[in-house]
Amino acid sequence: MRKYLISFLVLTMVLALAGCGAKEKLQEKAAEAVAEKVIEKSGGGDVDIDGDKVTVKGEKGEAFTFGGGEWPTTDLAKAIPEFKAGKIITVLSSDDAVSIALEEVKKEDAEAYFEKIKKDFKEDAYEVNSDNAIAYGAKNKDGVSVGLQYSQENFSITLIKEGK
Image (cartoon, rainbow, N blue to C red; front, side, top):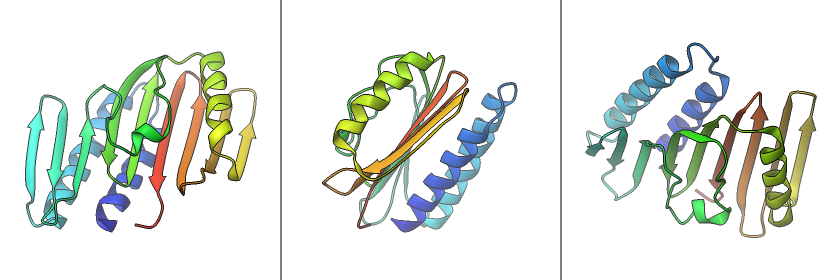
């Protein structure tokens, strides 16, 4: 599962750094590269492609899903309320990690969501604010870490379950 988490985190960073004009092309190439690596590392695994959503299942039953434009349904994703503003670009999801990238998000919607998250995620908290960007990270009492990043109508949400 560690290899999935590392691939997941690398792809999350690439998506967060994508520039406006080349964002779709970069996301597509990054997703392809991660898919190839995950499939290679999992010994082939069971790959299910459903439209723009790809799920890779490992030998031990672990699953890693990326793509799609819908809020994830894993138990980990249920640790936070669904963010309903903006447009979901892509979702990366496993039992131990979730990353959601959105665009067309208004700053006031992101700020309101940050406040909701802060109520349950308080441990080891950090927050960074500037004129154009906001970032917040913390853990909840169950050991789930959340990272929120907003900048120029782009919003990313990352969850990681500790202990894996």
